[in-house]
Length: 300
Length: 300
Image (tube, rainbow over all chains, first blue to last red; front, side):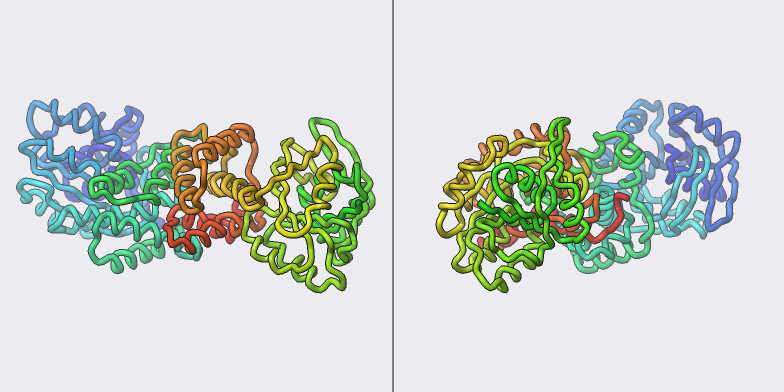
């Protein structure tokens, strides 16, 4: 199977490194510097002190023609617009697409891609991009994948061929799969980004924990979550297991990058609006993050 | 008139420096180091590049016997408990007390002091304690004073004798006088402390401004404020006029000191509870500040 990967951030590099062990992988990058460096040095994967190198073909993003059997789209949600326009302009429709974005704001865009089998995934790995061709796999987990529409054949092939050390887990219900991840991101990421704390602090500090609880209560009501207690216990477990980690949103704010707040809290605000429910906590958190995005060099 | 001042923080030093121009002032300090330094060096007042020195008698706090005609209590609200116990143990009841605390949580304690004329004040000056005997007056304003209970004669004497450059303004309604200040503190202080920004940023950053507005709406509903629009305009004006200032709560958090969050947001939460109104934003802000108080050295 030929696999294309669009986007060479931490997730793109991680998938390229592992999947190249069993598939022929081409990675498409946004900058020429990164194309060159990956072609020169391969992709270096660091895990628990060991490092392995994979020789992988890199091309600039606009060289992507959708000819691979499967293309994995591993850009951030706010970069997706460009890819969607690219897909519409392709002379031939790509056969199979797997979208790995956080949040759920992008689902409405996926409906507009005709004739293609579309899969979505929720990546639970921890990965850190160290430089243009090096990624550290610092949280071993799984990738949950589900069918958004179309024929699942190729997804099953991907799952069954994926390396054992990088498992893909099939989920029946794409909506709830993405929703669980979104809820986790919604309560952990903005708070840690505002407070500038590691994930574990949200449960160690008794007052921050109260805020976490209040926020979860508001979100679970807005989203009509089932099993709210179980989900909340899962959030606590994640804070424990990733206790010393800085959330992606905190890292984005620290690095003066755009965050995924629109994809995450923006989706919840849309849902609140649709259901005519109040979202005072989510709304304020959303604006606090948007406000932080505007202040450059704050952490310099 | 003999005036005692309990507490030698920025406000205590500021009042001592100005009032000593017309009254005989004794300042009571918490530490022996400060007693000694004020007795050795006087109190140095800096204003617009000029500095003046006042020779003022300093004594340790437990030397206070309430013998002065008026005692001004200029400690933080969370330090008031000790003073209240002291007052109860005095052999003679002090004749006149003026309380200058922020917030309104202390009002219920004032009812328990018998036979004394009690006044309350709201200090609108900006003042910064530079060291144990030096204060900078960086925001010229007024002190609003009102009668909490008893005979106002001495308060009027204080107002009419106070130096022109340090005006005291009489207000009929102590409750609304303190409430206006509390509302200003409630919307500006916690947000600036969480975001680590100067006051002006809350109106310059369009997203922070939305949070300011949402928060004000919640608070004004809980407190049944009249003239909510006028009050909100006043808050915007204060943010403008103190644009480059760091709020007292931000400074407290930066210096690992306790904040006045209980006196300010705690009071609003009590009111919400009494009136059975929801306070999701105030509650979360309260816990975020309490959580920050627990993390020492965060800004070191």
